[in-house]
Length: 252
Image (tube, rainbow, N blue to C red; front, top):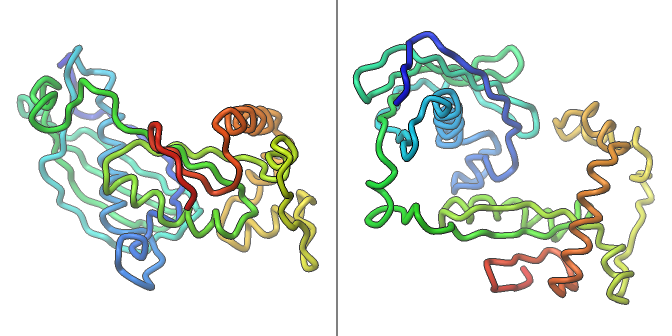
């Protein structure tokens, strides 16, 4: 590992998703961010902090966690995950960590990681020399069936250690492209084509209303949707949600 001195620090912002809750991993009715998920956030922040110092073929793995879960964290509101390198003991790195949501301290404590050669994991543990499986989750934001699937797909991906890619598609446009039957659209209570209405609804769901409003006019999102639409047609997708696992396709 390259020369590394205690004192370096970094803060990572993460927006918790529905599949990050305790309920999503089996603790029914507890719709706050799971302790295990918060620990994963800490591991992510620590790894990102020291990754620029890796030599070729190196990585770090977690070896010890000492944390206090101090308060609940909710879905949709960003959390700030801080990592500070406190000690370097040979190949062992010790970090002090803190997770905050707004002004609330959610978790604090220590995390230990060891520097390891990636070759130790290439065959017997993780087959790191091979491409990991990838799940493409094709969905439309306004579909209730896609919503139900979205609350489970992340946990399934983590359970089976595969990479999950979220692939939003405008279902009505997809139906037009393949000459399919358009879904029923419209809402008597809300005009979801109005950016201000979307922002208001986002705020009710503990999402960042300002970011949602900004996204409605951001051309980059439209370009992603168009690219996904083209790929969905090429993959012969005819309904949403659809999951493609490598070359296997099925409708959930």
